[in-house]
View 1 (tube, rainbow, N blue to C red):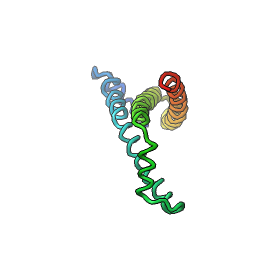
View 2: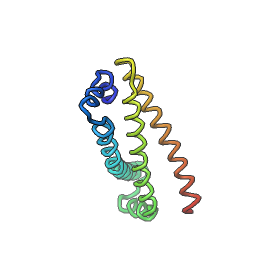
View 3: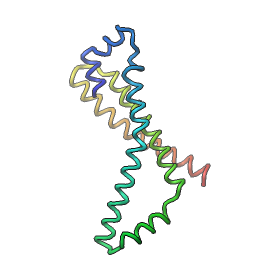
View 4: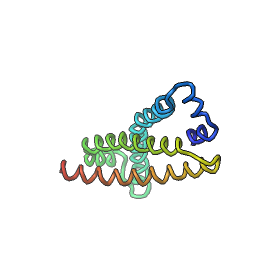
Length: 144
């Protein structure tokens, strides 16, 4: 949305007129930020899910936290953690590339920004699901 608004208000053209590449000045920091922060988001959400599951298991099923922790540690594999982190890097690049592409190709004023933002979200979700499926197929075939 931010890049789309900059495109509509002709700020991107002003940056180009100053001789600065919009890809280097606007897109690269966003891609780098999402590439580096997606694994952090993935780890935090996984830890929050485990804590919430421990709380629900304790509340509804009377499973002690210590026993739940042992079950989680026995079921959790290092390769699952590594796979999740690798996928989060891939998803960070995909989401940022799609969002920046849609943002830099906005036309039609404020309505175009809204349409591009919605299109960016839908495309990113669909692409992430497709690449997750493809990644899992390749992972299962080559690393059984």
